[in-house]
Length: 398
Image (tube, rainbow, N blue to C red; front, side):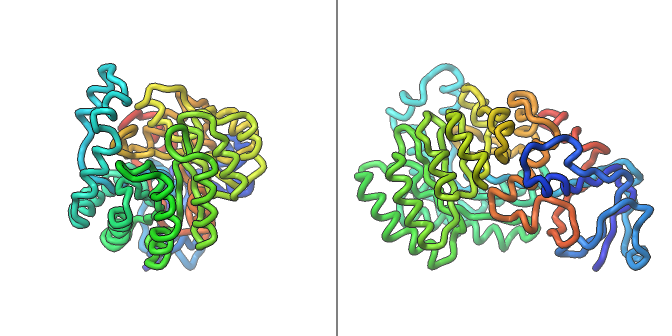
């Protein structure tokens, strides 16, 4: 059935952002149409423009009049989450917030290993039910596309189990798009030699994930105390050879030059970048790799935010995501991350808009179908309860 929304206060198409490929953006690049209209069917946008120019052939479509009180924007894209895991680390969070170190808690068997133990013991159904509830929370925040990483199994069977959950989410919530990422190299499993685990990732798990079609991306946590640049490159090159698209958890805890590696390997994104070097920023500016910034993690960890202005002013593309995870950012509120991007990272309206639409789509390889309101794009746009887009991140935490 063909439908139309008419008399939107504004339709923010994002066309100007596409034309500039998400780089060096000004507020006007959101390409807002005043008193706009959108015509669409179940799958695609058919027409967009001023309401007064609505083509005759669509004037008998089922119509909703927004009375110039509500704006329309592309469906939000959360391009970095760890949606599938079991257990809670709320008690650990309270201890850390009160001043105890992560190292002390981890030394007592806490930290990521707490989540790994709980995830290994959980059934697929248990993991699915908790992930489904989380996905619905993200949906209510306007998210229509969400990336989901594994990484809390740290063994062959559990990593596959977590990726199977994403398949079930696709069936349960067809109104959302789920992008699946294998992150077996998230940490090193307890009691296993790192080199042995890397061999299992390369020779056993990655081929199995590919054969079963369980993930589109492969990610590696290349950072101090986790995987070295050489280890990460070995895993990523093996993944690329199998046909996976690439992502890197890069330069979060220290400057490892992993952002430069992301650009060199033509990864879709380098994520975190709290400690990124100027040299790596220059590499990003010359590459198609998206810098995915995660301000909620900086807030949780009480550390300086990623240098968004440096990255943007150099000419790189920037996405904004939640990094929803049990240890360092337990939030699915993407508009809150937009607020932090404005308040703490100095990003302008168009940069924030692109960060959760077009640039986030680029980080997931979906820029041909998502992140804009243009004919032929997916009809997963959202109608805001506000007349202005800015209200979405002005209302902190709403």
